[in-house]
Image (cartoon, rainbow, N blue to C red; front, side, top):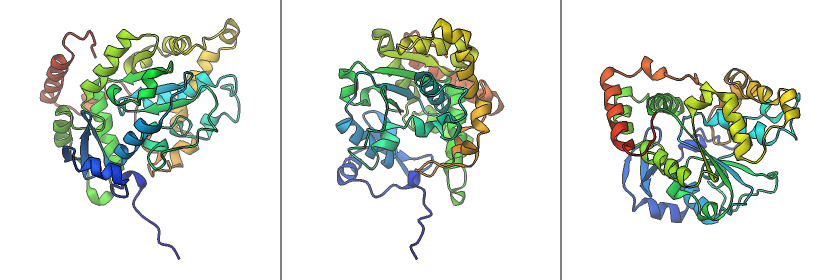
Length: 328
């Protein structure tokens, strides 16, 4: 009888390609939040598994002009915006009130897969034949690490980030859920120090955000820069903005049929988090779907961070974002 491997895929640090292991041996390293180590590649921190997908994606992904890429900083509302983008782009194929809408039986990470965390991790030539046009993908890659074909194409990038205080709390809680029980949990204080030093998944946070912010100012027709707080405050406005940006604006007829409201309803935190697939399902990489749904609140950092922590993070923000025109 075959033995069952108890280690989920996302925790596996070995079994990487020779090319990846050779690269890793040359990179700066720091202790990880979940796995043993993070490696600094092109100025940002990755796990070994991520890095395998990053270099494979950079070498082999061929962007189509019609592709749509959702890029986010980790724990900034990725799951929610994946659902919204999928429902928006596919609203003719799958009306939001349809009993068999894919969002009712699939986690958004399945419908809008990560290039470097799913598609290119174990396969240099993933099969994209099942993807309808426009193809919807996602990524946490910083701008300077995107595959060259993305910059050379006319594909659109939707970028989402979040206040760093809430981003940190959500990332700290999320990574603690991913740790095996015998690992224990990361303390808030130690993990906060790492985040402030820039040592976090796809960090430093500020460099990640600024990379896309500056490019969105240069190429507003190519990159739509959004914040989680803005989406939460005015979801209808931002959904319409996305429709316009992606070349699929809502029609007068759709407004009469309350299509915008319907999309926001099916993609709401309450609806998604209470679906059976998101309460009981797992991703192929081993994460419970439920780990991607925590609170979704703006300002939850107030329940966790001390005054000293807040002052430290705000000072770093002020220094990093000075002169950029970007504020949180």
